[in-house]
Length: 156
Image (cartoon, rainbow, N blue to C red; front, side, top):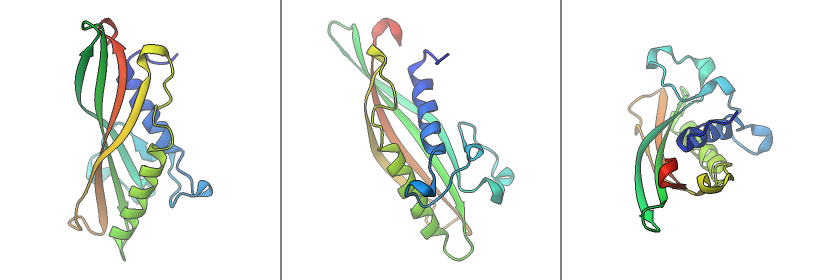
């Protein structure tokens, strides 16, 4: 049974979306299911077989009340972190992973939710930061996306 918490539904959808990254579909990488998680592993436990590795975590959320406080537009921030390793050019591999994540995230802006008031109406890419070469031979990015969804005040 699907979770009734919109934030969990959105996070689960993003994990499933990222797990579907496959080079046969025009992506640069093949992402293993085990390499996309909502739980951050300690750096020392991330092995070459985990890479590329993606972590999906929830961030802040803001609200806009309309209709006498009954309908709420929720602006949910999701953080995606990615890690690659390459001894010759980690930056190039990182840019390929960033491109794959952007492409995958932008396929379904509604995050697969269509159940009435919990319908996510939009997903926007907000920013992407990198480690700027400081983690070589690994490279790391952090991407912030914002998912807008709607609820009734009593259903948040």
